[in-house]
Amino acid sequence: MNFTFGIITNENSGRVEKIINSIIKQQIPNYEIIIVGGVNNFTTYSNILHIPFDETEKNGWISKKKNLITSNSKFENIVFLHDYIILGKNWYLGHLEKGNTFDIRMDKILNLDGSRYRDWCIWPHNHKFDPTSGYWGKYVDNLMGSNSLIPYDISYLSKYMYISGSYWVCKKHIMEEFSLDESLTWGQGEDVDWSVKVRRKYKFEMNINSEVHIIKPRKNRVYNVPDENTIEILNKIRSFIE
Image 1 (cartoon, rainbow, N blue to C red):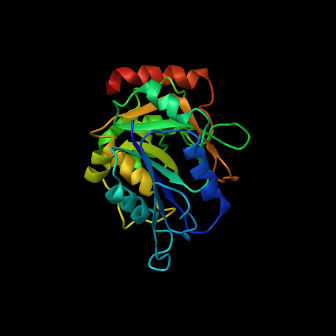
Image 2: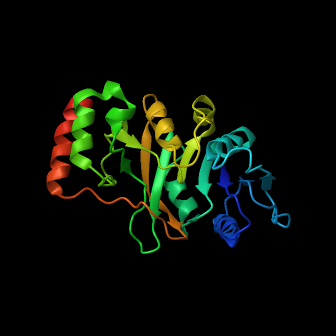
Image 3: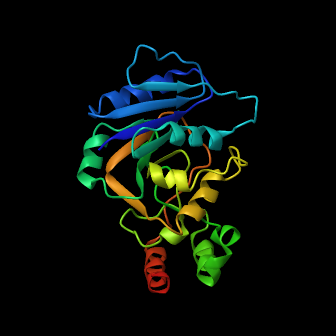
């Protein structure tokens, strides 16, 4: 499997170098790293393309940065990372085990304390973004609330899920077909907008064999679904959406 790792940043921090080193340690035969933004202090590394970015043109223009990663990628598998996420020790081996047949893939995302970050998520406001979801969309919204992390083994709710913009893996042809909306900036839900569009055609897949780690504290954390009753209700919904 060949990978493009696309890192977006707006500063010259040691975090980017930590990400690079976590990629190098995977010993992937064919890969490249694209860094958009910040200062190019990585000329001593191989396989790295740095793309300068004018942060004053539009504040928080992360959608544009990620589209630049797509357009400059050489490989079919693109890994999108914000500059606070590093790869776990056996990340590459986990992807080899899972295989190269997928559309959009999520790995485990773990906080500093080992808890889950926004990896396998229900979007709690589907009816606001996707009116076609109808009654069942609103039902899921009311059920989940802010408790949007669902168990990794639930794979039938892609219609109601979203991919967090902080990290995901996707085929290049899908990103070319469904580019991020560049009218949206950080904090305006560019990841939700993209997820709602792409999930109508392509499948989200969870890969529990690989994990990535948050290396700085994050706000706006989300939590696991509240109890077994919620899972039972989600299972009942399955017959209505398949």
